[in-house]
Length: 254
Ligand code: ADE
Image 1 (tube, rainbow, N blue to C red):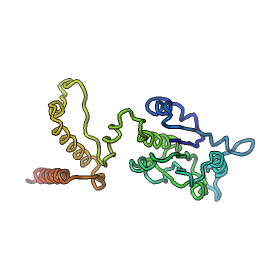
Image 2 (cartoon, rainbow, N blue to C red):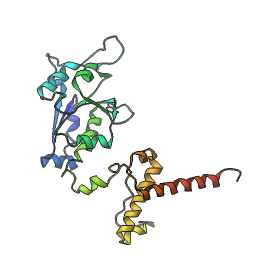
Image 3 (cartoon, protein in one colour):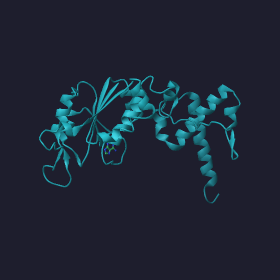
């Protein structure tokens, strides 16, 4: 898959995409990551990429022209594939969107900056806008890196063990179960007995229940969209009932 990133700060992308899994995926030709300096597409001697907003007010606005010219030069009109603007106003980036994007041949990401981006970029140049969370970053670069990372790891062959992409948090709509590795006992902290007894059915059962428990405690809203078996639902009903009982017992005056 090819990722094109349009940014005012191309140097920010060098190290995050050089090492570790993404670096190896690039070396192996599984992903092609092209980072482009928006400034180099800006016309004029000064290569201006921002200007004051019409109507007044503080801050600067990213100009439409350098972005339009960059997209033309990269032969990436919005019909050719996802042209994504990274901004806090975008749709929340979620695992399902990463999965959806992971089958594309090519994705282009634009990193917004300054006080905002000329609205005509949204109206005419991009077909998608994504936010990585309800907070404001200094620019879209870190957000674009998050999207590239989350999408790239889903491409077959990028992760050494395809098992880990399948079982991890969110892949099944639930949070991941707890993991342990050696030693079995450290400072008196022990690994749960079930994991060392070698009974694979019991281990699978325990892991499923831990996933459900963790999701129920930390992110209960995810349960509505998760694929649940009848046994899962029974377990969740038991959790609810136990919690109700707990509340009843600890109510003051009893
Ligand atoms: N640019 C600034 N803040 C952002 C966010 N939360 N998500 C995506 N792009 C951004």
